[in-house]
Length: 367
Length: 147
Image (cartoon, rainbow over all chains, first blue to last red; front, side):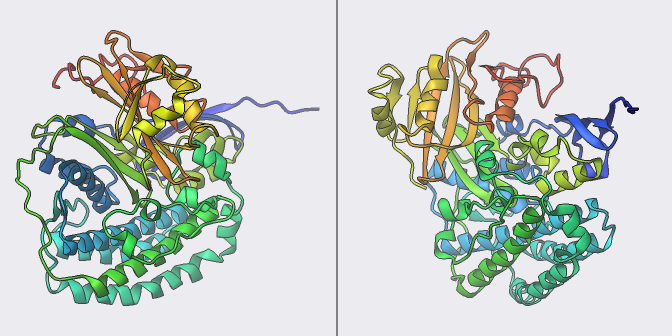
């Protein structure tokens, strides 16, 4: 005798804590198993690219904060780099160092958030997330010293950064750099070898390098599959070519490797900030650029390595005061390309874990 | 990551597709819109430069024409290239889909169809993505209201 069952369509999101924002999935289940799914985007679509066409170049910086709002600094950086290439503006060295310090601190903060929420999605309610947020808070305090804002920083400007760091910033940064490695050890002791974490993540949603490259996936997801490719190495911007750091890679591209790569990247970022701390030169932090900036006619695209992958702004100038077109290459949007391949055939409980391991941010997916 | 100059890319087309390239300069090439799929396949393949990674697809509305821009990258050879094509049909612009070469184009082409109104022939699931079905117009066009 056989038991027949009908499939059930379940609507996950847009208001659901484990969709990391307002992402919606229409999933067809057979019992616990995913048969088919359809992602629905657009609940946070604010038309950022269109808005940018109606503001001047300096004002667009504030719009970029609101894309991936867990990594405002790197969004600012990607935007100003494209503008500087368009206008052929040289940035003073101290400004470049401050940018890299801010961007790497932001990477640590974003990875902490990704790791904390991944563990939360796995059912480790509270403790890992609170530990991660404890250190993220320290980074946000450092940002507050730099520019007065914690999340929507708008710290970077076309031609450098908004303002030099205050005197009190440097001892605070030193203290953070001294203490953070111990905290990462603590996460490793608490989480990495944990049997439940290994059981839930090892071998879940493995992807091959070929599939990932074909689907334009970038960032920790690509490196977790074993390809040591990082825009900071392959196409260095700011001062990354003078810095010494490694690219951590995983083995089979499963959820565990994505988690592990993020944790190791935090260590590398700390080392980068440490090198900058020792070497930062004195001098101006910003080239004076007129507020009404009119770059010459042309286009520019400068990719950077944001916490979630390759981020770039393709900016077209018609010689006017605002961008003629400002296209955003958003990594977490394109990282969702293989969502079906990753989720079909998996269990309901794995679905939220896999989604957490992609580390999407709806501000950036929907723009 | 070095950029392959446009005239060098144009050179690689000379034998197999003599009519493909309409214009080339130091930074990019412009190709005929009618055969974008096969031209990019040529660049992806072993005779071309092995561009295995599609970084981004962009569409820009220049009013007289739409320009579709492909940012390509070869991870193995550490090179990038920019390929552009111009579509003069404003009523119903369309170009080949490149999803058969790079699956990374799937969501990006849907986004361009939604916001710029350019059809991609051969796309497996060309539906609106950010906006809902029935939304009037394509907001990234310069003649859209409020533009």
